[in-house]
Amino acid sequence: MNRLRWTPAQAGRANRPRWTSAGGGATPTAGRVLTYAVLIGLTVVVLAPVVWAVLSSFKTQTELAQRPPAPLPSSLSPVNYTEALGSFDFGLYLQNSVIVTVGATLLTVVVNTMCAYGLAKYNFRGRDALFLVVLGTIMIPLQLIFIPVYQMAAQLGLVNSLWGLIIPPAATPTGVFLLRQYMLGIPDDLIEAARIDGAGEFRIFARIVVPLCGAALAVVTIFSVMWRWNDFLWPLIISQDQAMYTLPVALAQFNSQLSVPFNYILAMSVVSMIPVVVIFLILQRHIVRGIANTGFK
Figure (cartoon, rainbow, N blue to C red):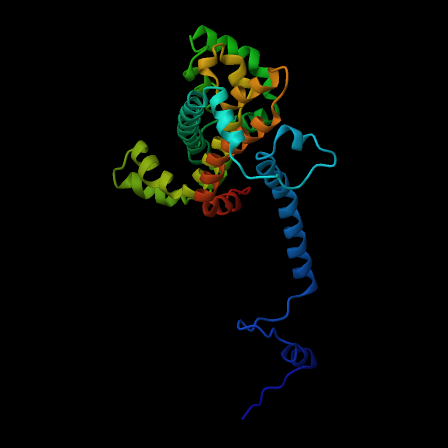
């Protein structure tokens, strides 16, 4: 019979000390320990401002002015939240933000998905050049196009309306890029088989392509929600009436007061972060997979 012979390297790995935990896993290498240490450090750096904002939202004006600042508030009384909610029409501004965010996100997903499908699965002259043009618009600062976009919105009667907040920023080149790269991984044979079976183009798009792009759609959705919910400059330009203000613009009203109530601003900022955090937690398992699968193909 042939006997197994171990080399010295294999014998050394076999004699490597094991963890004494119930899992019995191998001892982590120095590189793995360093990786986790760096990730934990970056997590602390990212979460520290959020934790500070939440704790400071319970502080008074006097506590916020202390030098050096105290890490914890004297009490966790929700006075700042109740007084801030009563200082301005929070319900109206929240309603405007929700309508604009939901409407703009739905429109963004529909427009970007259809555009990406055409650039990924249809062969026509100038397709690659058109994609490069779309991709190149990412490098154009939004401030450069505000004036022509505002003029077009004014001609269409969209100024000082919620439609003016929803329609102009609907198409985003970043969303088109992510979805197009993801759709390149869908086999063309699957689409051709559906055409042979008699399926129309719209049915192929809605019943086959869109369901396969769930992860990429989750990424575009969370990006769109964050962009629209936190957008400040465009709502400030297009909204001439306070009844059309969204939460970021309404929060800026506090800065126009003679004495800036930073405690109220922090309290309302924490409230405005909650919807984005909730949506991120719901879609987080799709986001990493969607970004990982939208590389260059």
